[in-house]
Length: 156
Picture 1 (cartoon, rainbow, N blue to C red):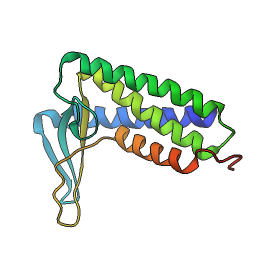
Picture 2 (picture 1 turned 90 degrees about the horizontal axis):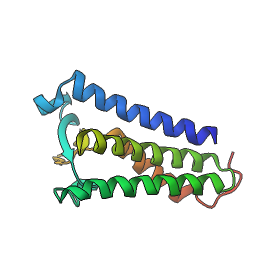
Picture 3 (picture 1 turned 90 degrees about the vertical axis):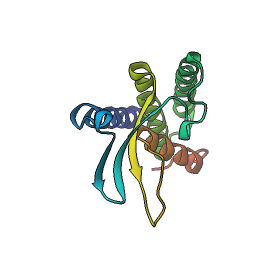
Picture 4 (picture 1 turned 30 degrees about the vertical axis):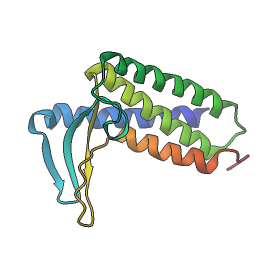
């Protein structure tokens, strides 16, 4: 249980701290684009009202509340599922990453009406038009961990 809560808290704090830094300290919403390690890593401000890649974005106002409710329901379900599963350290970490990331994006939707995305990674001649945030990375890593480690027992 402590591992689940600790991972959740770490993901949530890292996400919100990074968003605070780029929004408040670096003024990314006003600057829109900051080169960090060109051309590989840049900060590019994007307000995502939908889900991945803006899917379902720009809809009516109730979409925001629907996405908040879905994220919270998923967090509760995941919490119950991971807590009831046989002890599995990687599963606890994966669940904590997913829940922490989802809660980070819920906080954005409540504060800003949209999720603050800003990390833009480009590589190998491909110009990536999309941005993501620390919460998105935690959700992705957590989902991958759940796929790999679900159903395993007594993992050290």
